[in-house]
Image (cartoon, rainbow, N blue to C red; front, side, top):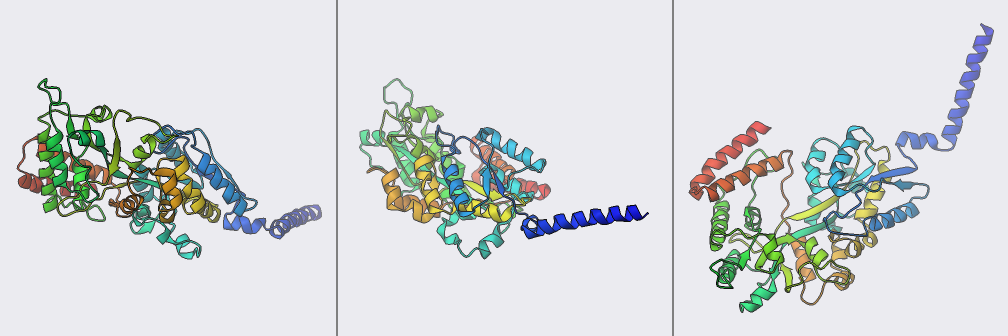
Length: 439
């Protein structure tokens, strides 16, 4: 019995000794606070904008270097070689296995699902307590895209607005001017009506006004709010929707039944096509850009405004978030800031990516003007305003499914010959019934 007591006492002494060392060297404090000397980040290897890019890790590596310099003793690790097309599946698998990185990029299509299922750390308190952080540095629309149910779950990393690409060569040949930044639906229709024609006399239309301009672009530029904040009600009977549907119908009738496509624009046979500004940056013939549209002169302008709307569109945004289950949240927040909030890192987007910085001072700087724009390009002030005023879509769990219902309604009304007003009433009931039953 005495030997057994001595053994227990010796064991307890050993445990206390280890604990003493544990507490003395600060490891205990680190353990309790969830700190670690390694922070992991989830990334993909290719461009978010789906164009060839040889600098996929350049900005990240510079941000990591900056972070490690400012946080001695903490290292950042990531898994390389994951393609964007595989990234969502890879990240979802990591989350399910509880091996998700401390920090990870969030694709726009994944945001709603991640926010709703509690995967993302609420950043509101970090933002509130961090005296060195100012939300006014961001474009308000890009920042708002990272919100869900009034909470900030992501910071924007880079973005690109939707703009109207213009074939200047056709307009010049037709004796027409490139529309200004305040152009309207009426201007778009007038130009399309004038340029759509059979140019070689073979009886088939081969020059077109616009492709790819859908109900979504029309709704955005008419200032239509399709759903309430929680996604429980659709406003499909809105008068603006009737105007937008009538306009889309008029545009489609100009082509005399011929369905022009992207190939027609690529060949220089179409005047207008909505595209992301990232395409402009990727394909405008700068020294390091890929030359795609070389047979004609082209540029981009804001989207046309509806009668009761503005020259606005949506913003495609790549986000950065913290894993809600991370045990390295303090360090993770600093890494998120290094990528999304540091002006030095954000300025590299204009050198090594095709998007736009989410920081106003970076995008509006003289340095950016010299890096990105040429004499015939979209003015930086106009670009900045387009990003700032971009449409922020609602954030609710079944948003994509709700939009699919609207798509079905628009197709039925336009293609099946519905009376527009009556079609709005009928489909408004159907969509709202769907929203009610899906909750």
